[in-house]
Length: 195
Image (cartoon, rainbow, N blue to C red):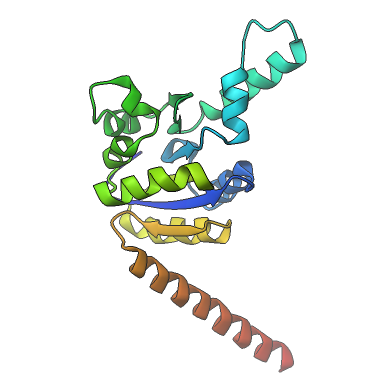
């Protein structure tokens, strides 16, 4: 169930395969309904959604479009500024209804504030989204799971991965500590192999 108080997020470049991120999150125990994505209007998926036509004369193109839209509809929410949005989760729907006008749902800073980001972070992400490509937000019912979600996002190549409400400095410290633990764990396992 989506919640704006306990969540982790990751920001990715456009060349990262979204399906790999989603598969990793699913394998880690996070359901599609707990995942909200915001894609750049320049992302290849945005182009496919923009050009989708259920009444297209080309059956193959129409089938691919239908399959893509079906897949996007499985998530808690998918927002593509200036293109459109898919919202499956009632909790995400209520969180994203921060403004009375529909354009707010198409991925601007108000949308991100509705998810629980500070105004400053929301404006920063709005600017970054056009450059980077993908923001993945994972709502967690339990606060403890947010740390696990952050690690999964980091492991899947997020350029920035943090917990909702965590400062950039805190996120960097957590990443450094995680890398140190990984490195120390690897040296311990090498020592065990030598024995």
